[in-house]
Image 1 (cartoon, helix red, strand yellow):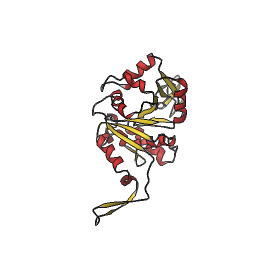
Image 2: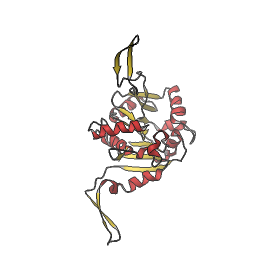
Image 3: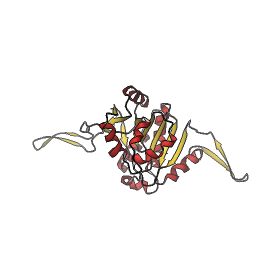
Length: 256
């Protein structure tokens, strides 16, 4: 099974980092968040990826083109036509296809552009800026059992602000990290049938605004409920949290 990763957006809410690089290349623990996402899928045996590039996509291409340079010790033999010797190759069992899906294409449009690289069978699809400890094997099984064109991972995000419990004017309890409002939201980590892509009209199509509502209305959208860790990297605050979890050895998404 292949996995398609959206990696072409502008990432304007994380402009401190994304004015220099695409958001999936922003690092957590010294590795691009895109690398972490691929490692999650690889843990479950999915090693063939299609990356939907757009904004500053050449930086993603450069990273994979020079993967050993980024991840291994090397010796440059300047006296032998600048030959590069790689020591202790830290390779991955991956096949990565990088596709230019347009600078300003919408999410559905980007997915539509990579259809020629799919093989007509079920595939995974997710955003290039979110991490989770999703059981991808169970997710795929859920999709196969329900027989719909699309399955999304439904999550319940925590609240962002401390919650006050009031008794009149007195604060009876303060909760620093409260649960959210118990609403289920789209957490990415989709499994799709090729027929779901028939609803993509062109580059301007929004996956969330156009395609998902159509699939839901046609009873072709299933939800896999994930109650574990899930964290998007929308802001610098989000990145800082992910960085702290990794640095402290408490990264729930590190399944490998």
